[in-house]
Image 1 (cartoon, rainbow, N blue to C red):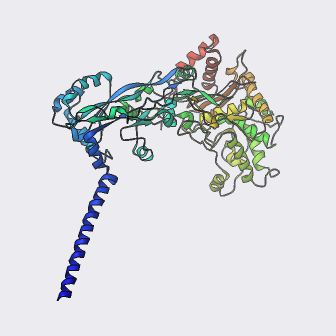
Image 2: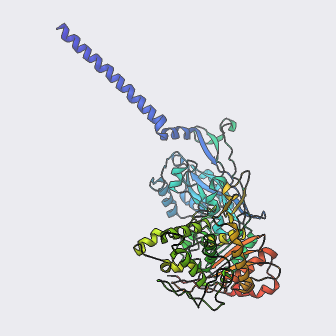
Length: 618
């Protein structure tokens, strides 16, 4: 009996002990969850005593190469709220003060509380009710702020643009995406970041570092001043300023010439790789992406058939046409297919080819490389490609020969991203031999892809790549990666933008190509670029277009020796290269070298400004 009682006593004792242990464990786990895992309780506790106010840094400003201010900051004001602190107030008076409707007020409050639309929502943390009020609108609201408990005003900076130019280079800022918030703990919902252009590429340099101001509350939630005299506050650190290589006056002039046209102008300083002008047309005034109408304007541009948001300079993929012939000549010289004196016959075109026979215009025949570049002879470069790909004396298979050709083109900047300091650069297209094997079941020859010889067919390039070729030729064999930022306040550029990149073409071969381009200006297809006091070298391109009128293109550099500038002009549906691209290039060179249009070119300027080229939109 005593033994059974003892057992029962021990069992009860164990139950009580385990019950106490379980209760303690549950309380400890709950405390751990509330204090460590779940921030909701901490937010509630902190919000009773403190208001943590974010101090936004001034975003770095942007200048052009001549220290003209391009992008600056202007103070704007956001209406913030903390949901748990809101008390009954006159919503009609609130709506009248902010000039909004009661329907908008109710809709906005529901959106703030919807965790699907507003991830991370908490009744204890500040939320944006309305953003980007002007100083006048904010002042009116702050006069009545005491009537609206739970609301306060937060100051931020908004971008402003001094000139209505270079929108795709500069880019714009916009609300951060969910992905940006997940990938970078700097951002919280409703923050802004660079979305395109320089604003996006240099976001981490421009944005600076946020600060914080900790304000103390009393038992009624009223602000009593800074917590411990502000010793825990952190001042914001302003973003660094950028100086671009862009010349805004040159850029504005180029944009004026490109009105009512679709295409691009790119100008590069060969010695440094700095881009002085980069125009994509059509474009827009960057100030249209500032303020509360940003979303509406974006929707209009995003659905516009002429795609003004697309930077054709680096995203446009076009057949380069005859502007590709200098690159062909370089490859043929490097591989010993031709010499500068090598003669080919042209009887109004190339006689072979499975996919069409490239035609040609009237000129001397036979002719050498320099004359072929000057007259833009199609047959010459078709014969050169034939001799390189179909001759088994140099390469055992056509695939081997083609891959050698492709690798040279890659070293000249085609079929790759050049690495410009802007987002969304296209590679263009230089197919590999496998592409043609697959398409032709392994049986093909130069005739199958003969349009490649004259920059047509599958070959696609950006205007930046075409301009870079002109820079390579002017430098006699190297280029520095094109870039739009000249220097960074207190920092250095990436070494890519200061290091020479030599092609795999021997420098000796560039002299013949440059001479051919000089002859094109003296007595060939580029005579519209001829100037008495400036030795210009150029190459036209009339780009066949299956969807309408041909595209007009040209590349050029000047002077012939010790070049200062390289240029590409590409006009969609512009017709012959000499029709519109050459006059535009001539005017741009005059503006660059003389800072004005020369009197003898006033008729060119009038002609270009009055030329309207209607694009073919499908």
